[in-house]
Length: 143
Image: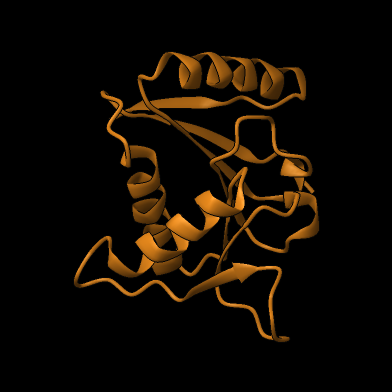
């Protein structure tokens, strides 16, 4: 397996729901392109909020998704959860946790979401450095 493509999307502000809304938009886009997606969060509360937001963030959009771990056998193309990414099968990892996601190298693409909150910026810079140390070449996209 090759080195995953790592993209940091940087929002110009620090709105309360900014990163979550961006995560929904990117998951919608990836799903539209036929990719499977795992939205990785650091807490059950964040996972639940993201789960709800995926239903409502755009009126004309439907992103088939479910919480991970799965209740049944069949998985939706978009999964939301707190389980280590190393345990989840998907092509695109959208990281909403603060630390470098364990098992990120298993994915084709990793997406990091950054806003202008000082703590988020500091943690993002640290993950950027860690990806480089792992032999990745992360790219930054200012929105």
